[in-house]
Length: 199
Image (cartoon, rainbow, N blue to C red; front, side, top):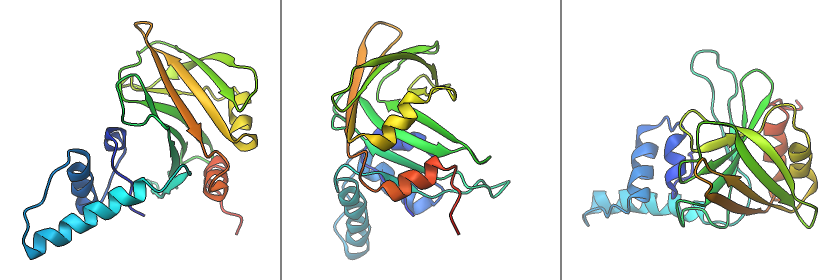
């Protein structure tokens, strides 16, 4: 399955196929292919990738395998309504298999969040907001849910949407609204299970 493109955050994820990676860069940077027959076919494939990305609010599964261990490290992501519209927006909610039968849940931002524990506030549907401290990614552009925090994980499977806010190192508030938590639940649940199939 080809990773979706259209937002710069996807570029931080591993895209193994050279053609898919080049098509992604073309899509993100709005590169226009020259108009001859071979080039117009390449442009059509780029447009298809962009069109798939705009198909609505639903979990998107990207299947991956660790090159050394052959462990399943697939992930699903859900784009926010604000994805790609500014540096203080949260672009994606991502759940990925860790290759050891577990999962990691993270929020990806367009801008820099920080390198220390991050203050995260979220509200599922019309419930009361919950505030927690999450772990930063090494590049400072994502926040990881600590493994012992269960409220967020259970909200992903029992709610329609979630509003998330991450307070960055400088006090700026990065927000994202994620609707469609109940769309394509089969892929979401597969990844939440640690990428273990029922068969």
